[in-house]
Image (cartoon, rainbow, N blue to C red; front, side, top):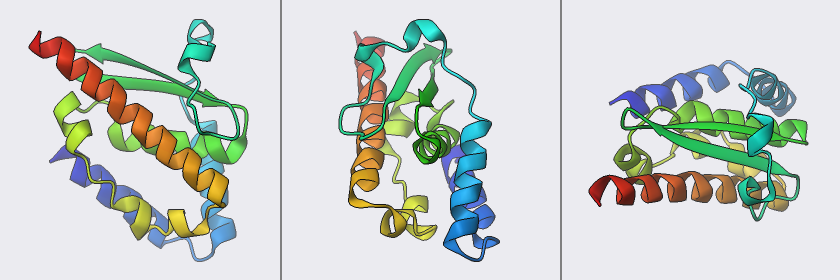
Length: 141
C-alpha cells in the first residue's frame, strides 16, 4: 500500500536525526519545500480551525485522488502540514479516511510538540480527513 510505504520513508528519515533540534530543522526544511497554495485559496474558509498559527489548507479531487495544497505563517507549522501532505496527498478518499498515522508517534512528534502545536496537528489531520469524507460522499452520489 502506497500510504504504508510513505510512512516507512518518513520514519526512516527521522531515525537518522539524533536530537530534536535536528528533527525540528528537518521539519522546517520540509515546510520550505511545500508547494504553495494558490493565493485565491488563502481565504478564511480554508483556515484550519484549532491551529494557533494560520494554516490554509485546500483540497481538490483529481482522477479519484485527493490533492492537498497548504501554507502557514509559522515555520514549524508549515513543516508539520508539509509532512501531513507528504503522507496523505495523492491518495484516494478511502485511503485517507482509513489511514492510521502511526508515523507521528514513531518519530516522536506528538510528545515533542507543545500542547497548542499538538492540537494544531490534530486539527490538520481532522480537516484533511473531512475533505476526504466530503469527496467520498460526492463520488457516491
